[in-house]
Length: 126
Image (cartoon, rainbow, N blue to C red; front, side, top):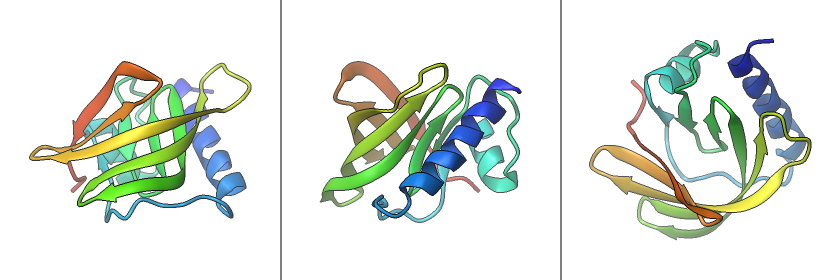
């Protein structure tokens, strides 16, 4: 199975199993890079290693998927959320806190567990 397809399958399964208890971000639409937006539009992975997508339910990359579990803080278009992440090749999900900030070029995502991780900016998908 292609790497992107595997992760997207995991995201779908994670979303189904946690939908009853999951929270959602108060955003409209999908935000991502070129390949993330292509997936948001078609539901088909390009197989790209450079894949980032933010929706109200999840943060998805080529190698990981994080389901929004609970929105902890909202300040305008900026959010702090508890997320449950599954990385490719790992058996168990890990809990983390995502900081999702809005700027002139879209959303940027960071994680409290690793200050070196910054994804974005991710513009609104057209």
